[in-house]
Length: 252
Image 1 (tube, rainbow, N blue to C red):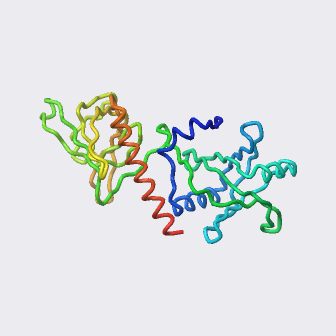
Image 2 (cartoon, rainbow, N blue to C red; image 1 turned 90 degrees about the vertical axis):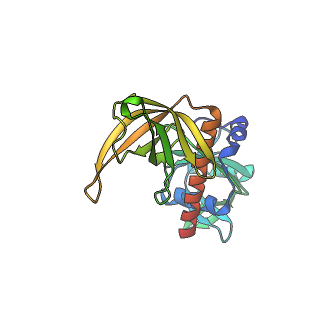
Image 3 (cartoon, rainbow, N blue to C red; image 1 turned 180 degrees about the vertical axis):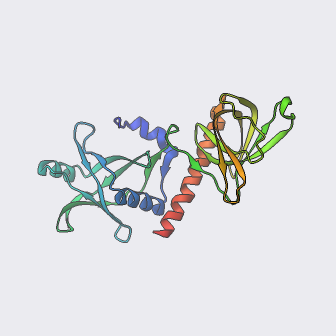
């Protein structure tokens, strides 16, 4: 991962999570998956690779594995605050830890810190696609060309990312030619509003459902999407993530 600058942290404000339940849920996932964490003590010049061992919301503490270097552990404790950089499901996560101290843990020595008050969960459009609700589907309205009847057809979404959407073409109304582009499409994002752009077909998969009916899943890339519409897509993805994390926290 690249070094984190203060300017980047300020620019990533929209990705900041402040819900204690969401933060605990994400930290627990990092611990359960034993994700490696880069702990930056004084910038890139002093880095410790560690992992989270335990997250305890009752005491508002997180236990972190200590460095193999005693001298580095001393610098970590003396620094008081460190910055941590890791990833979960290919999504970059950045957070700070304050008030670090050494503590006995599981027959050895580890580091204890306060659970961070906020963290940054940074989307990467080339990696992450967020499934959309099944019970109340998000819908995309696509105007069909004259050779396909010329009317507008409505398609439920399968997932969404900052790069595009996947839709279900259950009635096989659209073609499967890679590169075919449909202009003036409209995606209704609940609680966010409509997004308009062109959609280009990038992949096609025919599926046989449990009832033996055939459905088609089309992967579509955003084309000529405005910055405002892209920001709306990102806000909706963030909304879906927070709802999912809240559910995970409730099950924890």
